[in-house]
Every structure is written in structure tokens, then in C-alpha cells.
Image 1 (cartoon, protein in one colour):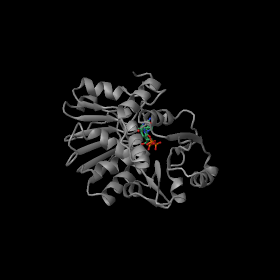
Image 2 (cartoon, protein in one colour):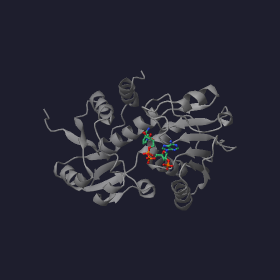
Image 3 (tube, protein in one colour):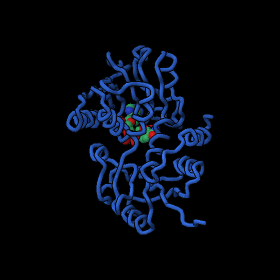
Image 4 (spheres, protein in one colour):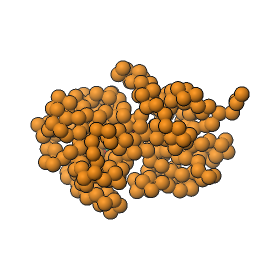
Length: 282
Ligand code: NDP
């Protein structure tokens, strides 16, 4: 018998509405892994102590959510290459006695995209320039996308992301200011919503875009996990686009974190079904 489980978890504030614990523990149970995931409410002033506590208790790693994705970096021993470029960490892994920061958000997005389209040479239109958009833009560029048009409401954030992609990856990027009824630029193969528009409870909010410029053959992905079938997903599907909902990204970023911690590639269907039940989308 083994009564000592390996420990992982999440540090965030607020933590109560984060369903990650249910998704990750469903995977641990399904695979008979003697691992636990503890959802912790950690205030910013206690983050350093929480990271020290995790080390003292022998945790294998942890997720960081808002507001710790940037500030956790000063408490780590190193960063994986893409997390270094993105400048934010959502997953921390204990490797050879060192806390290493990873960012699995964009990797999860890219893993969801790979089965439906070739990434090499793609032209991407990306709405948003926050944390999710940074992770998506950097990973798409590292995966071979040729060009990214960043469209954002606030110019400085959008311009900064376009500049980051140009400076740190081999892709080209430009910022386009978000105009009313914004058209999707011609030549776009992949459209991504990485803004918060459409997230529960504001489920009727819509992107202000020229819907007629969504063309059959485009891949349209939404980072919003709840509800999975956003207005964008429904409209793009009706326009003949291939669609990817935000649940795929959420499941994949969690599955990649589990792989980093445990070495096991878990069944993503189990995780997705758990979230669908939680979000009432089954
Ligand atoms: P941030 O707060 O860092 O960024 C929010 C982005 O949304 C900014 O670009 C912001 O524009 C834009 N935005 C918000 N409201 C509006 C609006 N009314 N009109 C136009 N633009 C708007 O958040 P994150 O990047 O961390 O998260 C963004 C979304 O991605 C969230 O809804 C989150 O749920 C989702 N997400 C999904 C993940 C998944 O695994 N599926 C993982 C991580 C995030 P501006 O710069 O002008 O303020």
C-alpha cells in the first residue's frame, strides 16, 4: 500500500470558480495515478510562501492562474524557452531540484489545432493581446506560422505583442487597430479569438467583425471555454469554417501540464467530458 500521494495543485485568487481541479483529478483517477491536485486560494502577498511551502512538502509542480502568472517568475529557478518569450507562466515543474516555469496555454492551443490544419506557412488573424493571446501568438509562430495580424482594442498592448513576435520568432506580425465591423484580412487561414468576449455570464457579447469575411475553408478557434459554443463558433460553423472551441485548449493545456509532472499522456476525452458536465454542455 502507498499512502503518500504525489502532490500538484493550483495557486490563484479567486480559486473557487476554477474547474481545473475536477478536470485534472478525473484524469488521475482514470489512469489510477496516485497523484492529487489541490486547488489553493493564494493572495499575492503569500505567493512566495506558497512556493516555498510547495517545495517543503515535496510537490511535483503547480499551476498558476490570475493574478500570479507574471509575479511567480521571480520565485522560480528557470523558464522553459517559450515561457521566457511569452513572459508568463501557468505551469511550474520540479526538475532536478529546480522550479522550472512553463506556459502550456499556447501549447495546448497548438495541439488542438494540429489535427485540423497545417500550421507551416499559415497567415493568422488573432483578436486580443492579453495573456492568452501572447501564449497563442508565440506558440503559433514557433510552430511555423508565417504571419500574424494582431487585432486589439487597446493599441499599446496589441503593438507590443506584434513587436514581440517579430523580435523573438521567425514569423512576421503586424498590429491592426480594431475598427467597427472589422474585416478578416484576405489570405487569413486561421482566425483566433483570444479576447474575453463571450465568456460566461456575458454569453451574448459578440466580436465586432464583418461576419461576411469569414470564408469556408478558414479555421476559426475560440479561446473561450465556457460556454464552448460561443456566438463566434456558431456563426463560423454556419459559414462553412472548421471550428475549434476553447474546451480543447483548456483540456490540452491541462493534459500537457500532467505530462510534464507525471510523464503520463492522459486520456483527453475523460478530461473534456468532466468539463462538459461542469459547464452543462454535454
Ligand atoms: P487578459 O485580461 O490578459 O486579456 C483580455 C483580452 O481581451 C485583451 O486583449 C482585451 O483587450 C480583450 N477584451 C476584453 N474585453 C473586450 C471587449 N469588450 N472588447 C474588445 N476586447 C476586449 O485575459 P487573458 O488573455 O488571460 O484571457 C482572455 C480569454 O481567454 C479569457 O476569456 C479566458 O477565459 C480565455 N482563456 C482560455 C484558456 C483556455 O485554455 N481555453 C486559457 C487562458 C485564457 P484590451 O487589451 O483592449 O483590454
